[in-house]
Length: 138
Image 1 (cartoon, rainbow, N blue to C red):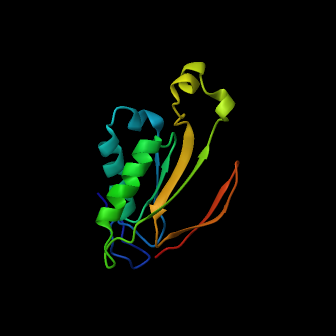
Image 2: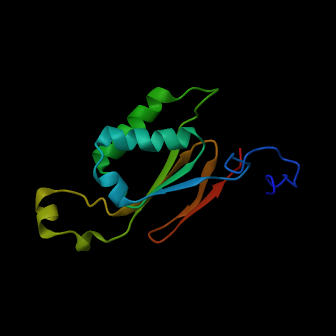
């Protein structure tokens, strides 16, 4: 029976070891649905602290987004974690909100949100249909 295949590129790292690339975590609305606000924030910040770009299918509420920024500010350290960049755009126009949401003054969380480490992500362009971002490898 043949043994393991030798690593032909000379790299002894296992197949699942991170490389120079950029990891993108795309988190579905269903995954976030059952989480509390702080659980969502922890999930996001843990990914970003690892150097990943996090994309949320449905975004955060304005309160959750404020709390994310607040928690991020307390965790910033010059040598370890430089903070986050966050860009959001609505997937639906305000006219698509339900009557009850409008009446109660609730904002829809149906929006795509991109969050990444401040030292790796730079927004080049943003409009109502596009977020263009440059992501460095470190």
